[in-house]
Length: 155
Picture (cartoon, rainbow, N blue to C red):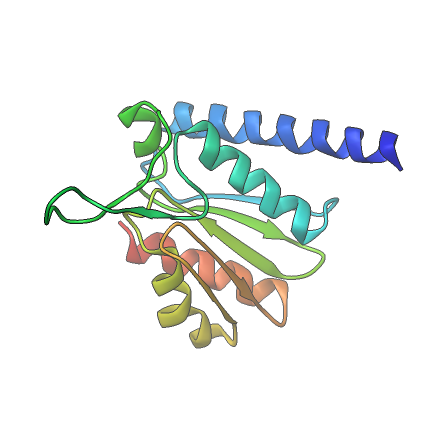
């Protein structure tokens, strides 16, 4: 079991590397969507959180109290502003086996709101925070339609 856990950690880390390279090369103009047929939903969630952490985004979306009446700002680990900007538009990671779509962003595009307001159009349900959300669908076609809708909505 230990070897399997180590192997899975290595695979999810490599997939996160691949996503960051893809985001840097395509510059965030279009909505990035990656489908996985070989991983469970929990592993895909780990990949998304790994990408966020490496780009300096707190995947828990924690808020930090401002000083003396300042507005609250999301608490962010040290990170480059340009790296965080790679997730101005949400990253879509999709579990083909389970028809689950995960969204990850820097909070600029509210993932939870996008899911709550739009997934139901295609029979999806779900929710989340401003920096990450999940939506469950009946079939792959509905997932694809939802991704297409988000891409148009976020242009």
